[in-house]
Length: 108
Image (cartoon, rainbow, N blue to C red; front, side, top):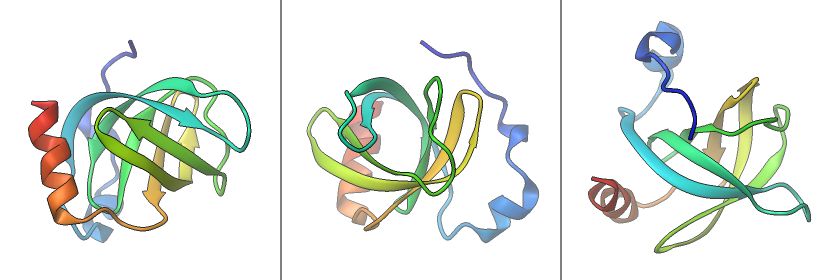
């Protein structure tokens, strides 16, 4: 769906600031901004605090969005950074370790 990214694109400082290691995944999902239509996207990596997502025309930093994917309730997140087709987002309420483990296990 989207081209793969190289792990070296993540800055060393950003990696040092994270509380959890990123889990590399390829999870198809949908994102909605405000009342706009749901759009297909792909989660590239995930932590309990946030995720990196690939989607065309990502909204700018600070935008609140909704995320949904199979088997998980709709989640609320905020865009922390965005480039052409990739963005880093943080969950407004971090997901529990149980939910995180379930998502990772289901994705494999």
